[in-house]
Image 1 (tube, one colour):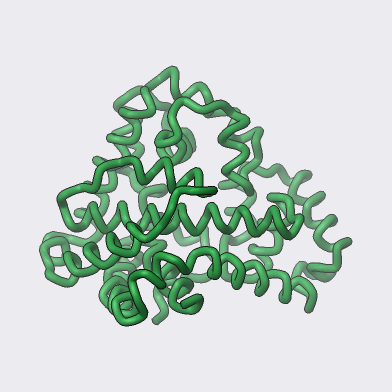
Image 2 (tube, rainbow, N blue to C red):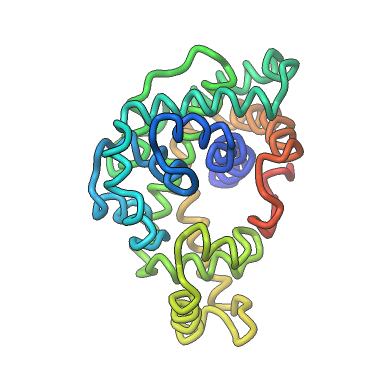
Length: 288
């Protein structure tokens, strides 16, 4: 089931991740009192955990610079309650998906089918050792199919992400090294976006690059070495292994069907401009 887990993750990711860049999120949460910009995206993702401390957030946001997180947490909880922020995030996701997908797709039987299948997969996840998944899973399921699909994609993404952090820890990689090697694959963030979105300064990034080079993971040009390529392959394989339970319970036929019906939805979200052009080096989730 590992290849299926990876394929389904790739195609569901944009349906979840669009919320981080949605103007609707900024509009709703600044209306509650949060400050415009990064605070809205970061606080809305953390809010299901409650009014947690900087240390707690830094522990689960593995590749983020704690200095960046400290600009927003715990201050965000003094501006709006975590419960209100969670509700606002759902409202923003609902509006953003309506804009990106349009009424015809929103009302289509294919979207409803994707929502049902994704929910069935997400209900196969478990909370033990998965703090971000466990927190987000406490929210009730939305009635609207497009919002239920988004919630399911979010749960599956956080479940996978919790497992990925466990893999990084088990392999002895710190956050910046993991981010540098991922950027070097050419399939994730472009370097400027990785530094900006995760909050690493030019000097901090340069130090991480040097450590990664000294470890023999990248060469002088910044490309992955054979050792680095093997490491990234191991990380992804182990992450897929830890993420395969919901897909095993769903079964290969339904999982493949979910991939097939979600793929046009993911492509539509991307085509509608959900993501800035200068963020990602590749859009692999739009490939079948």
